[in-house]
Image (tube, rainbow, N blue to C red; front, side):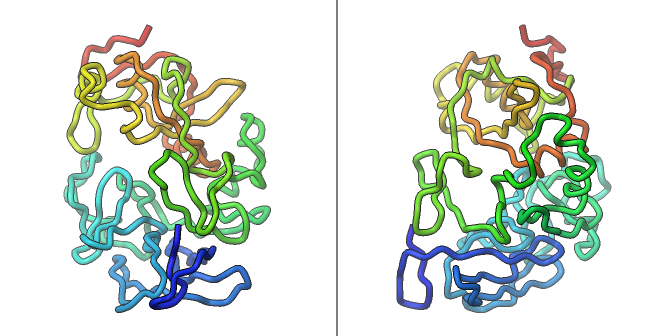
Length: 296
């Protein structure tokens, strides 16, 4: 992937992210540590930079921005930094279903567009940047005792900073200027969905965009949707068993009897989801508001 290092000049170049305490990308540096680009934002993520010389989508809170619409992709929803509001409703029953971080973006963060939490500063452990709460979980031994990789093996952001990577359309990720190896986060593998366990014993029947799990199941069964075109689920190994952090998509693929696209979950993602209650490993799951049947 080519990225212009300066205006009107294109070279194969690797740049590295530097973050602030909120997870915002504030600087890009080259391999020699030279400052290449600086980013400025207001409290709600509106960029105050008029011109960027380097093409880079990852900016406010480390999320990717769509340059055409100016919207940030927060996984569950899209966010508009101009208004400080999400474009779709929150799945949680708040009074205002569109607000970002309860209008307190200085003291709170929203990792995935579904719920906010107190600001959790980024620290470095074994050369890997991660949230303080994640680091504390790792250092207390909870992760290692559960069979997760050592922090030094963190594939999401190993090293003092993170290389810019973009999907290349072939189900792989490429580092700027060179192809990433198979250990990189973003490596997509098609797997037998029936051999992956759930991390919850029950879940709701709908996605955050209003679609039902059954809608995706039917689309997969009919061939209207191809398994390889569905967003990959995040998986991790525990006690020799592969587990999913994205249970609704897994449920749909299992019900349809289809293989599923997977990517490795980072240590931080596993710790974050386990703190939200995704801490079981079960081959079956109940769907609330649907038929309450378990998967055979």
